[in-house]
Amino acid sequence: IPEVLGVEQKYKLVFLGEQSVGKTSIITKFMYDSFDTAYQATVGIDFLSKTMYLTDKTVRLQLWDTAGQERFRSLIPAYIRDSSVAVIVYDVTNQESFHQTTKWISDVRTERGDAVIVFLVGNKVDLSDLRQVSSEQGEEKARELNVAFIETSAKVGLNIKLLFKRITEILVIHE
Ligand code: GDP
Ligand code: MG
Image (cartoon, rainbow, N blue to C red):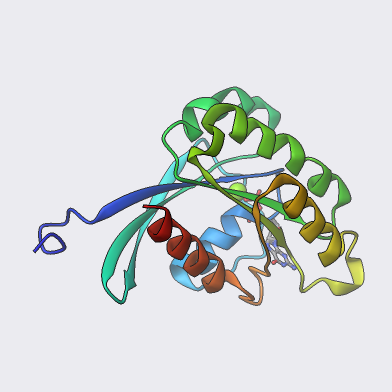
């Protein structure tokens, strides 16, 4: 009955990270199974909803996209305030975007403490010739900062569904 009435549990997921690491592409691939090679700067903040059907449960994910630009940094605390999950994305071909994830994770922890599940995501693994950040480096940082970790390619669809499946499973366990 609760599902019919549309009162299934809702969770807010926020996507953070530097500009052009693939935040919008990961969301778009998951929502529409499509990939756009043209860069489109995210304007402001908005969200998309996706219902996840588990064996004994239905949950609704609200995916909040944002821009990584410094000018939006001041909006971040308000943006992450009532989030359940923070997905911190970097580009494995861009060392600086990896370096910056420490700051993003610390911003999230400052605002939300342990109330939020943090996922570190190394995207663009299809560009293997251009890789600057190894899987081991990603794993090591995730271990140090006590966050979950996965590598993805929004372009070829690698681990995109798995990312959201893992997030949903952790959310349900934490309930
Ligand atoms: P955002 O600023 O973090 O939202 O980044 P976008 O999703 O707009 O992606 C920035 C650029 O990287 C675009 O040109 C995308 O097509 C490209 N891109 C995103 N994900 C991938 C990926 O997994 N592989 C490759 N090769 N390019 C990607
Ligand atoms: Mg974007």
